[in-house]
Amino acid sequence: MDTFVIHALNALLYASVLFLIAGGLSLIYGVMRIVNLAHGNLFALGAFVTASVVGQWLAGAPTIVLYLFIPAGALVAAGVGALLEPTLLRPFYRRAEEYQLLVTFGLLLILEDVMRFVWGPYPLSASALFEKAGSINVGDSLYPTYNLLVIATGGVAALFLWAFVYKTRFGVVLRATSQDMRRASALGVNVNRVFVQAFTIGCFMAGLGGAIIVPSQSAVLGMGVDALVLSFIVVVIGGLGSLEGALVGALIVGIFREIGVNWFPELELAVLYLIAAAVLLVRPSGLFGRAA
Amino acid sequence: MSTVAVPFQVRSPVKALAWWLPIAAMLVAIPHVIPPYQTILLAYGLVMAVAALGFNLLLGYTGLLSFGHSAFFGAGAYVVAFMLKYLHVQSMELYLLGTIVASFALSLLFGFVCVRYTKIFFSILTLALSQVLWSLAYKFYNVTGGSDGLRVSTPTLLGVALGSNEDKINFLAHSYYYYVLAVFVVCLLAMWIVVHSPFGKALQAIRDNETRARFVGIQIRKYRLVAFLVSGVFTGIAGALWVPLNGLTTPDILYWPFSGEIVFMSVLGGFHAFSGPIVGAVVFNYLKTAAVGFTTYWQGLLGLILVVLVLVLPSGIVGTLTQLSAAVRKRLSR
Image (cartoon, rainbow over all chains, first blue to last red; front, side, top):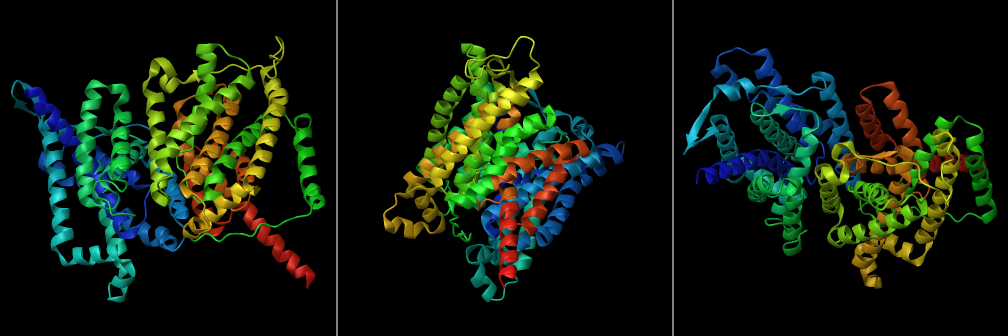
């Protein structure tokens, strides 16, 4: 029973972080019809910023201060997103999709090396927070308390996002733009502003994923590229552009990854792809996707 | 898709020969003129040109952007390494045969899933599927050597092995270079025939207007699948040619950023032109070598070049040169 609970918690932990990344990717696609290949790098950026703020600059500060500064990475990622959308991506909306993918691939290469330049090639950690949080008893086993915080953050983020998209005026504008950009524009919606906002929120989520996970792991170069591939599996299962899909997809991937890691470590990724392929054969646009 | 079809310019055969003969003569003479290191660099370029040529049958002619061609390239390379390690095969011809069979089977499998989709979904799916192979190559350490990869010694070419006192560099810069050149020319001709055949024209019709192509009676999914197969096999052949040059195959060539490099090459050369990916692959190879020698941050430099390229010269080197020469000719004829 204890091991079951621990496996379930691990699956949830993984799903929380994945939801933050893939949810942002999906939100951006849903509104702007653009797949940002550099999205994973914003996740990595969040991790690096939080690791250097919490793990280095503020090392030794009271724990409560450290907790307050965890979102620093998310804010920086959001800021970078708010800068990138109008300057680099906006000229590409009218052009063929291959160019959009190419420009974001170029961006990925640039961001990867910018991070290498700023933080050097070595892993960066902020493990003090993780260690200070200690662990709690699950039956006879111990489980790190910090991981529960990550799970809670993922849950709260999902809740906030749902409320934001379905219960606020801005959410209405967002959904309207997503369904019919031209008509929304004709009705007086400032589409450019909605795009910047959606992109910024998406980047904020990715950055938050990185920021929240970095105390329990380290920030390493290449983590963004790996994260992107996993979030692709999530959106393929859940349906690109759907937030519910990202949530369900993240849970499915989280659960099967936990099973894979423990029982078939070599086939961990392959199992995930098999699930994605199975979903696609049954429902071509993903579990929650709109028919293309 | 908003790509504009560029009408194919029919040149007279004499004019075409005037273009191609000097280039061919140069490619044949080059190992005797430039240092071996430079020749090997060119051989890498030609190998990548085969890969990009195959890739561009999908992007340029069928309108499908694959971000998973590293799978076929890597499959080609690993098949050679496996044939050497487990079957003790040393003949390059058998390697090529094995690669063709393997990459055909692999593209059939991937293509079956992927050609149901187009646009971004196609790109994501090819990318995701290619990463299965990467994770397998990475994790099955006993079979694939994991991140250390597998070593591949110099193969025999048409039954002729590396002489016992022959320098390996010299072998690669001469015998192997000509071998690569020959395979490149065969692939070039084969692709030329494919894109100018009724089949190739049908692919372009699908690219330009899917609905209309369906009305004409083209079975779209079948055509796309065949294009996917041809494309995958070409890229697989390139992978097999690449291993002896590199002497080692690692999971890096299965990792999806490598697919991005193949895309980069085709766009650099210009994916609307038949010769675009070839020019792009050779130039990219020099560009990357120069960038690696120039700075630790070569990756970012290449990314910057890609962004500028897409913003300023979306039709690539060949496309831009064609436009320039057309403008010059117009001015002269006035």
